[in-house]
Length: 128
Image (cartoon, rainbow, N blue to C red; front, side):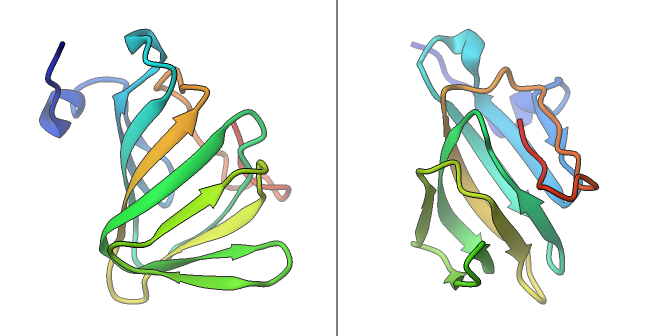
């Protein structure tokens, strides 16, 4: 058993500025749990085209608001208590709210190393 806090992560390589927000990678591959858990902040007013080619992801909103849009143009408003799931390596747009950050608990399978960074200038969608 172990206990880890967000504060424990902030001075390590597992605290990531990903271009449109931050990610505290609380549980990573080295923990040998088979998945990653992150505390993710999507900054207000941002939009990111993302595509996790090597990972499945589920995100549970714990604060704020924002939206996720699939490649068919379906837009889903995300509020506290909502979850969205990228179960087909779905390419998608992730947006923070107009006036407030979107705060998520993100779970990745297989697990992340913890130091991955997005390339938001990739026109096909940032991935890792």
